Every structure is written in structure tokens, then in C-alpha cells.
Amino acid sequence: MVLRKLLLLALLSSKSVLFSQTVVSNPSKSDFSPTLSFLASDWMQGRGTTQKGAFMASEYIASMMGLYQLAPYDTVSGYYQNFKIAEHTVKKVTLEIKKGAKETFSLSPETDFQVNPTAQSIQKEAQVVFAGYGLSLPKEKYDDYKNQNVKDKIVIVLRGFPGHQDSTTVSYQKFKKYYPDTDNLDEIKLQTVINKGAIALIFVDGKNDIKFKNKKGDSIFHSLENPTLSSIPVFKISKSAADILFTSNSISLESIEKKAAQKLTVASAPLKNTKINFSVDLQSKIFAVRNVIGMIPGKDSSKTIIVGAHYDHLGIKNDSIFNGADDNASGTSGMLALAKKWSESNLKPEYNILFAAWTAEEMGLLGSEYFVQNLNLQDQKILLCINMDMISRSAPEDKKYRFLSIGTEKETEYLKKIVSESNAKLQNPFTLDLWETNGHSGSDYASFTAKGIPVLTFFSGFHEDYHTPGDVASKVDLDKIQDVLFIINHSLLKFIEKSAKPNENKP
Ligand SMILES: [Zn+2]
Image 1 (cartoon, rainbow, N blue to C red):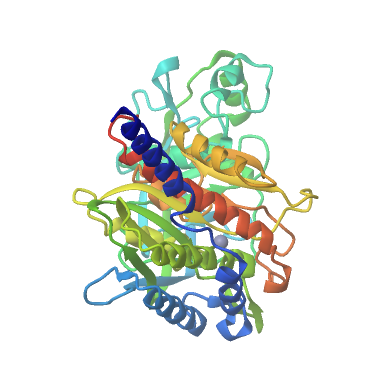
Image 2: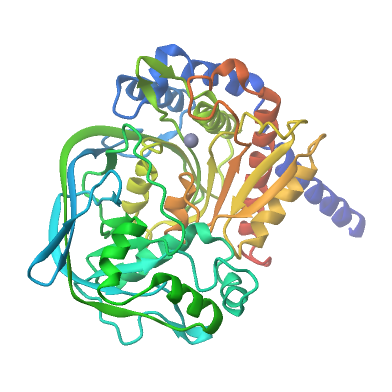
């Protein structure tokens, strides 16, 4: 009997090896290459979200989901998640500084200021509060908002942090460790003033003048038809515009920056006798758009893993087709190839696996944002979102074409471990760039991290054809896609295997 038991155990364990490695076979080139070529062909007209191309592409993706017998996401609309977006054209923007009752300075939008508007026309006038760097750091007992009430006011802040221009200062050493990545500082400051009830935020650069880009087409932007995230207009003003604001209040930005760098002094104060009047006049047009979503139902239907990629690209601009082969016919065809393999395996996975093609990513992640906003996260737990955006090319400095960038959030070490182990199984493993997505918003993963959902986002490198008509199917690296999909498939199986084991540390 002992012998039989042992044999049985041996059989069981070999079966589990079998499970993780062969139960869902890895996509090969014939699974994704034709799809990629078709989505990136001129027939698809560059898949511009509000253009004909995206609708044709979505029909094709839905057809393939039907062929693979995925369950439609919606009982009424099938594979389509229909929604509306708004295209806003900025007709006119104004910014006026009012000193006392008599003096008014009208700033020029070409040379003095830039605005990042919200999705509605707006006209407001309010008092102005200068809030230093706009930072609150209780751990260091530093607070630019101490004793300042900014509710219903316009807040003006410096860019960067105390000492940011001089790495030898005490302030720099202190702040750099909290803000190693200064890219997302502006966003942190914006969220802070929104929470404090301000009606607009103005950035000023103490030393370097802000570069104004007035490229054609900058005056058009997009949003969901009914955006739910609260937002306020954000302005950037020139040094000369800042001088008008500050000189009569006897404030010198240069000396403020110097003192902050050396002594960490807080210089926040309301600007006396100063009001700002601003307006943004928009003309908005509504468009119907759609995500395409199919599913393999799992044993535990309350938990879901998402495998997604955006299918939209830039469409036709100035009579040129932007085919978007790498961006992101590559990710979309990868998603469909994985759907095909998982469907063919006839495996009933532990959790639902949802295969999604997002739209309107190029307009600001709108498709994934809409999806996430309409999720009922109480009834449906999203364990993981795998995102593929540009997985078929290599950066010029990557001479061997073997770099792969994979983003995860802080404190999801188990995901880094899973992808590293999967990569090591490749015959010719990639050199991985494992980075943290916190504070970044370069692709649809950001819609999920905003809701605290763990992500794995795959990207194979920036190249000279990025967002140009040169991003065509003949230039994609099919071997690279195949290996990226191997890592994703392997990681997916590992992730499920680990999450489903009750005794192991659950992700
Ligand atoms: Zn993209």
C-alpha cells in the first residue's frame, strides 16, 4: 500500500507540473501575426477612436472573440461596452490679474500662460494664495499650507521642492528621498489643492522660464461624456506674469527659493489686494465609442483577472494613415492570441479571465477609465490587470532587441518574482527593466492602479516610428512578441496556481 501511495503522489506531482506548463499552450506567430497585420493594415485606417477605422477594428475583434467562444461581457450589448466621449475645442481662454480696484493686467495665452482645462466651460474670479511649493510633509514637519485657507481660492505654487535646484543643500537631501521622481510632483500638488477646495492651480517656475509650446492641435482634448473625477483648471504662467503678481506684494521668488533651500522656510501668504479672473470657453462634441470585452468564466466567479490592450490609435491625420502596428496592434493581437489559447485549452480557470480591447487610450486612457468607473468592485474583485502596450519593437540603443520593460506597483514583489521566473524559462531571456508604476500614467494600467488594482504592464521600448506613419506592420519583431506572450502566459498560470493554493502566501 505504501508503494501505491507513493506512486500516486508521484503521479499527482507530475500532473501539477504538467498543469503549469502545458495546460494552456503558448501563442505562436501564426496566432497573432495575421491579426496584427490586419489591424495595422490601411483597411483599418489607423483605428482613430472617433473615426470609421476604430469601428471596423472593434467589429473584427468582437468577431474573433465570438470565434473563440468567449462569453460576452454584457448580456445586452454582447462584446461591446458602449459609451460616449466628448471632444472639446478650446475657443478662448483668458487670465487677468486684478490689483485693487483700478489695475487690470490681461495676460496673453501665447506668451504669458498655458492652461490645462477641465471638461467644462468655466469663468471665475477669486482671491489668490501663494502656497510656496504646495507641499505638506508632516514627517519633516514641513507644511506650505499651515495657517492657509485656500477653499474657493486660486492657489499659486512654485514647481519642484525646497532646494530642488541645488543638490548640495540640506533641503534637497531631505526632499529628494520623498520625491525621487519629480515627474509626478505636479500631480501630487494638484490633488492636494483639489482636496483643500481650491478652484484653480497656477504653477510658476522661480528661476527658469516655462517653455510655452503652442503647437497646432493643442487646443483639442477629450474626456468621458460625464467625467466623475473632480478636477480644476491648471495654469502655468511665465516669469514676467509672475512678476506682476508678486512685486507689489514685495515677494521675491528668487529669495524665497534661496531661503527654502538653506533654511526650509515656509513663505506662504495670501496675495493682498490681488484677484485673478479666468475663463475657458469650450465647444464640445459627443462621440459614441466602444471597448470590446469577452470572458472565460472561472470556478470562482467573484474574482477576475484582466488581460487587456488598447486597440485604438491615431487614425488619419493630414491625409496620412497612422497604422499603429506596434502601438498597439501588437498588444491587441497578443491579447486575442492569449484568448484563443485559453479558450482552446478547455480549462475552466480558477477565476474569470477577462480579455479586453480598450478604446480611446490615445485620448487619455478613456476606455479603461470608463470600464473601471463602471465596475462594481464590491461584488467583483479584480486580482490582477495585465496590460500590453507596444510589445513588438526595440529602442535604438537595444542593439540585440532583448530589452523588455515590465511595470508593477510598489509592494507587489510577488509579481516581479513571477515575471522574472517566467522570463528565465525562455531560451534567450530578456534583460528586464522592472519599474514601478506609481505616479506614472503612460498607458491603461494607470486606470487600474488608481483603484488599487495590481498590474503587470508590458512595453518593449521607444523607437523612432512612435506616433508617426512609420509605425507599420513590416517593422515588427515577431520573435519578440512571441517571447513576451510566453512570459505573460506563463506568469498568468503561475499567478493562478499561487493564488488558488490556500496555504501559500496569497498575493
Ligand atoms: Zn499605445
